[in-house]
Length: 469
Image (cartoon, rainbow, N blue to C red):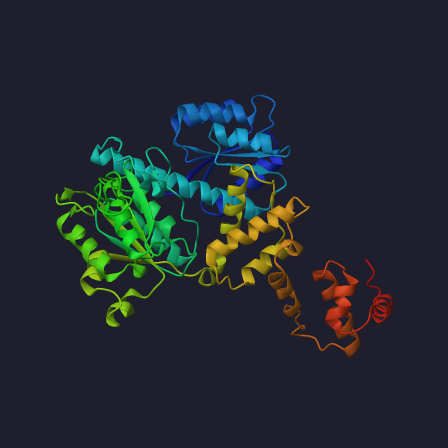
């Protein structure tokens, strides 16, 4: 079924341009110059997304959004304005806007925001449907303990959005929706920084346990003794310093989900204890004698090849088959380069939501460099690169010169000869010098250094080829 989008803008040219763009991408669009006309239409027809200008004579976009959100809370809203500011963006998101889009924007930036908003709408709608089917009501945990620093309560939070149009990511999105309502254990595999915890949180948020705790623990962050106490808790006097009884993370996750990150680092002895929890649905605190029943779903994650670890005897076979009922393998970012622009826009949007420095987008040169970078650190590295660039840029958009040096220098290797034309040596020299001046932002010293000549020689060539900017 096509997503339905309501488009409101008092400028006829903008309205027609955006409508054509949305329809070209397969969406069902209604467009109005009048906010009142749009509201009247929305009373009779459900719309997944409202895209509206802010400054309009009859009713401004903020007022329209507040009205729509009060009547149709499931409809996502994107506000467009040529008078953007951090304060107004923060106010808009507080009132319920998905995004505050500053004009001018490119078609790619606009469609990226639309796709992100509709992704969130779909996930939220599915979560509500799952909740309605089960009739489960929200309840709170009774386990208050020091381990709650690892715990996230998701009582009313919307599910996180898995960003991407890559076929493997789309398949993961489909699989998440299929397995979330079940109680099967899940093993998420993939390189570090690919977003394994994000997938785990999405499964929990769309599950019948979404109103219950999501408890995450990194199995590689503790030695064996500490991990035992963290997971299972302990009784008073169980060891030196145990001055009172304390529940562990497994108890804290009762009725909810436990996320065992880096499970490949879990010691053998702990694997045995966790296997009993999976088999018997009960735990025994350190120093305790009474079994405590627990009802938990286990989602595990690892960057290791656990099957190879089993064959090598480094991981228990019985534990592997218990946690690996369903396997989700997340591809590295260099295998889904088409998702880099979407992810970049989403990350910059998250900066706005945090009230950080306002950056409206990324230049085409910078985006081209990012798309060609290998990203050994995957999505986490992309986040770090963009956060650094947003912090140091003096522009309203991230430019090529704001990126780390090793990425910016990728342009040095991007010079190409024309395929259908044989250049003279003089033409080749002129075009290559022009290329280097462009990617170094007209830095003469840097350009001369790359060419292996002095600045005086470079100046003569710039004058000869009329390349002065």
